[in-house]
Every structure is written in C-alpha cells, then in structure tokens.
Image (cartoon, rainbow, N blue to C red):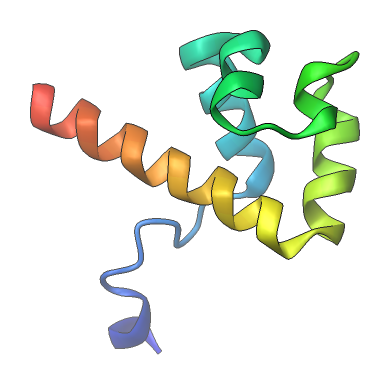
Length: 78
C-alpha cells in the first residue's frame, strides 16, 4: 500500500488542512478569483466550503490541484 501512495502529494493531508493553507496563503478573495465557487466568494467559511467540497468532486479536484501547485511553487522557491 505504501508504494501506491509514495508519489501522492496529498497523502495524509486532510481537506481542512488544504483549505486552511490556501486561505492563509492567498485569502478568500484571491481563492474565489482562482477557483470560481460560490462558497469562496459569498460569505466564505471553512465549514461551508468543506461541506460543499465533500459533496462536489469537480470542485474538490480543483482545490487539491491548486494546493499541489502552491506547494510545488513554494518548494521551488526554497
């Protein structure tokens, strides 16, 4: 099982941690610009965003992709 997760950058990271990291890095306004989802643009909160993202696979994929992109950029800058 470890071999299948070895190259997965999201392994062991919860959706909540991903959201907190994205909001901390860019804020709700910028997050709403990058991924146009109503839960990011109208009265955003971690709880409402988690609820929506857990029910909506396409939106979750976009958030996870943005997180992976952000982490790779941070890693390259170091």
